[in-house]
Image 1 (cartoon, rainbow, N blue to C red):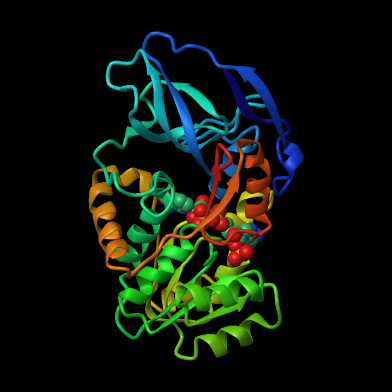
Image 2 (cartoon, rainbow, N blue to C red; image 1 turned 45 degrees about the vertical axis):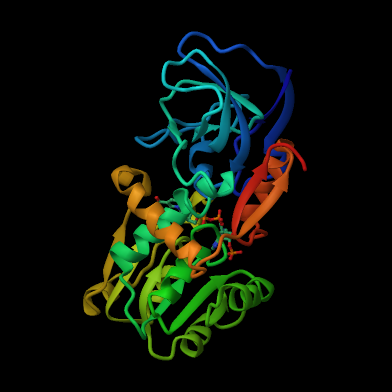
Length: 338
Ligand SMILES: NC(=O)c1ccc[n+]([C@@H]2O[C@H](COP(=O)([O-])OP(=O)(O)OC[C@H]3O[C@@H](n4cnc5c(N)ncnc54)[C@H](OP(=O)(O)O)[C@@H]3O)[C@@H](O)[C@H]2O)c1
């Protein structure tokens, strides 16, 4: 049997490009004692993994990715063969593996999904019930705490976290949910497909004026996925008591000189609460988050949206497209084409 692997060929200079990655064919090895062979079904493309592609990137969360090795990423897959005591043949697993059709692994970075929402499509565990859906849930319900009638602004609103956060804000009764996005086409989809009340195209026109028109009563919650210069503009429109769940900084990941806001004093004068969070540090609350998201899915109050590529060899393309804003919903690669 052959494995298709996507290697980190070059360290991206700025935003990732397709030729930063190389597709190779290798032979699949049998699992050694303590390992299992996993057939990856879906690979999750997450902008955050760009952070660990730089040479000096290793930190408490992940090591820096090695050149010439398969790119690290989250996958969902099935155990094909096992010499590991707790991973059984046929188990559905999710974890931090790599951009490849088959992976050899122990259980260090794996969660066995057997018995957890067995009736949903496998890719839900990378999307709406995975790290990104749960980030929307934790950020919005713990920190944002939307109240009926409030104005909620979400950056990267059509991305994997943003499209779920927007839906949760609506069902919690926010009356004005505004998405920040890079094109009118994506903005119109936010309104028609996800019931956002409006959008701001941050690449177009006078931003202050767009905020004045979209948020005439100011901003009560800013769910921030991008950081960078947009936060400065938002801070000029926050209400007293506003909350800012700080989920990510995609605008900075490819930027060697990240930009911060120069008006932080707005946080003081408006008694704003800005709080960062990491979803994977709340493992013990995953059942709570999954149960709540599942219940909203079953009652039709939220939906799952997937931006799917087919064929593991398209991982590099899919990753580059994320940074070009091509996606709408959770970006996934289905390892084997239909
Ligand atoms: N804290 C946590 O535990 C946690 C967990 C998961 C994810 N995250 C973070 O959450 C954020 C969103 O992740 P995601 O998976 O939802 O994103 P995603 O699906 O990967 O989408 C990324 C989106 O970011 C926008 N974008 C790209 N470059 C940008 C730039 N320079 N300025 C502004 N927007 C830009 C694009 O949307 P537009 O075309 O609309 O601009 C793009 O579609 C990321 O920062 C990620 O690291 C945090």
